[in-house]
Image (cartoon, rainbow, N blue to C red):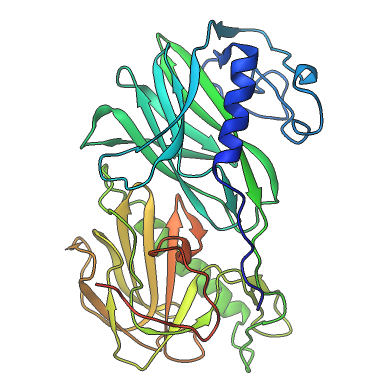
Length: 381
């Protein structure tokens, strides 16, 4: 099992974008109406184009700054990079882009370089409440949620990097309506490869994943899709998550899976924790129970809606101790580990979904620790 590689310094990308914007002395704001952006369509493509794959290979003055029609340029753009806390309870100083003029005052990223399967928090501060604010990232649209402790002009969301994302340079686009026009601000983001196991393939010793089982899986996925629709208007969780139960790591995020020779393999998008049947399972953070159900393939299952389009999923439980609609707190007992449904032994399958993208649970727990197969974890309640 290879160790996860050291990740690129989170501040580097933001420093680059601030430097580029200061040198061009302008923020390009697209006013293309409400039509969806198609990067392959020259009519709806983002107004300001900078080839991020080439931006480190060519001089700044040779960057392509061609602008399409219907583009507004706000000049001068008074920008600065600062290091500050992005919320009152944030213990860390983080790099932020500050705009002294315009509707947007500040955009702050937890980090702007992430591994496949990782997440990053984005904070936006505006002069006035924004109309229809959205974030577009990796072909997905994200809601922005107001931070009640700060005010209606402060927003937050969590962005997910899917396991299958190719390493490279991408854009995060903030869009909002301003006096009937759709305006956008784009800034770069980098995805690097995660060091996932390639040889430690998990297999079942009997061909149980039959076409009938696959059809049942598709049917049960409807229950999870409905559970993901439960999304509180405010972010309920706070701080880092805890491991939901004590046990040994037996299944790693990103590990190739093949259930029999006749079926295609795929990569595991969760963490499996093995222990004896009846081991207590706790809520990793605050939320609302959006599903508590006994299913044939997934076994006894629970979904917690944490708000902000974040959901925790727990499979193969032996006992369900909460019901749909229950409000739960971090560390609250919600069930017991089991061996129900399609699994190889007693274990808890724990998955963290962000905007329906499965992310690596280790990035949610305290310290974002590197973990190995066989490692023992315990809830820190």
